[in-house]
Image (tube, rainbow, N blue to C red; front, side, top):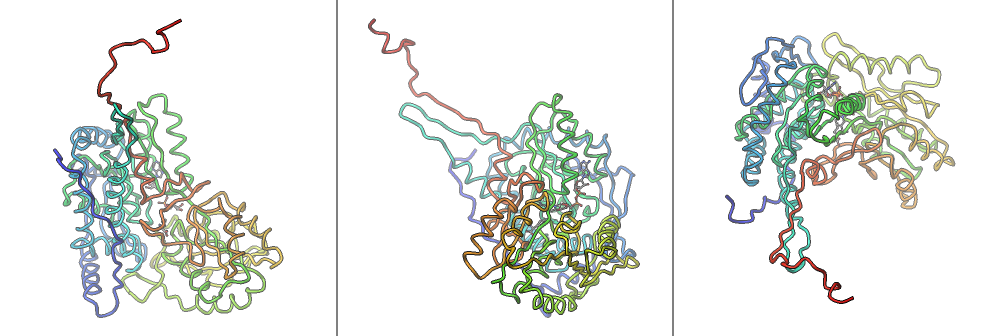
Length: 543
Ligand SMILES: NC(=O)c1ccc[n+]([C@@H]2O[C@H](COP(=O)([O-])OP(=O)(O)OC[C@H]3O[C@@H](n4cnc5c(N)ncnc54)[C@H](O)[C@@H]3O)[C@@H](O)[C@H]2O)c1
Ligand SMILES: N[C@@H](CCC=O)C(=O)O
């Protein structure tokens, strides 16, 4: 039992390695890439700490080269889901009772393992499995996940310091308990850090979880699970159950023990899960806490006073890093007529310099799209624009799936501010630009605000302070992460808590105390020092 009030070390962001030529880090990462590519692995389910091989398998191949097979993974069905629920509930008994500093120590150790001996494994696994460049993988699979673990443990301890006022004669206290039941963590393919964060944020607070990783990112997810085991996470606290969405999701969402959902992925999937919970709510023991971060249609809005060169840089990085497969990626842009000719010329010149290919060749800025489904969806938008007389393609537009799923950085210019590609999430390297008349600045801000159902990220560009004020006010609810003279991507834990509202999610801000509090179930305790011995009121003494 603790006999002191411990403080979690004050976190700072994990430094990002740049993997410059000649550095030992570059060599270590290249060696790890070669090692992982030279072997195939078999990924089991991990339930109650035990490896389960169901025999129902799917292949894991790199998105950039169909010939490179990374291995197979086993898939869960209703039977294994029930085993995972039973294992989680069993583990909850000891985990929820464990002193918080012991839980914190496990996640601080996980952070140090990832920043140290596991760094190149997680980075290389994400480069190969999800086709990220070394830098994109480093900021995600290493730096952001380390940050999630160091900051979330710190936020939990800070929240517990929050205690109510006690008048004389009483001691009021707030106890921060985990939720009863289990949490269902459902993770997307595009960020290894999000995959690691969604099951662990609730676990830090004492919850137990079932974790369903995205089918196209099982490879890196498995390494996270192994790392957590090495850090000392007790068996059954997090149960790893890859499989197809509905086959795993449906039985979980029918369980009476479901206490919460921690989801990141598309808006449609989240809405379907929410509906399922609604259908089953009468059978459930708890009202599940539902936290979901979903899609976006993120914008860059430019005022005539903006500086062009940094705007070009922010547009390219915001739209095309990780092939536009960030929920935060710039996918629509509003630019005034007066800046358009100069911007267009410089932008096209720079986009032409982008190199695309395998992530193992460090000269590439872009690599492949995650899988065939995404490739077909994205290219159907490009085909649609090719055929439309309201659109012109000024960069890219070509694609090729013969070796891997490659799509060129594509820029569409439209005369219709409500063109399909201005409204719908594409989730690929496709940016649509609408050129507005300078005198229609304020009407165009309104268009930007109400063109799509989402509210995730957005960036405004101007040198004129008054213009920035107007843009910020008019777009107040258009984005949960709002950037001034910057790209709309690359939020950092502890600096820009992440999430959006409207159709983009519940905006519970991953990587902040606001998210951690969703996994806590507060008990208010009032202790009376000297309880009264007379039930009558003073005013009853006389008629
Ligand atoms: N807002 C954010 O913070 C954020 C961050 C990353 C990604 N995203 C969004 O994620 C999407 C891309 O990720 P994705 O393609 O992996 O999303 P997705 O919705 O296809 O899948 C997300 C997860 O849900 C699972 N799933 C699918 N159907 C299910 C069901 N019926 N029951 C339970 N689970 C089910 C998938 O297997 C996967 O694990 C984009 O829309 C992007 O904007 C949002
Ligand atoms: N946190 C990331 C986005 C995560 C979604 O895909 C960013 O800010 O770019």
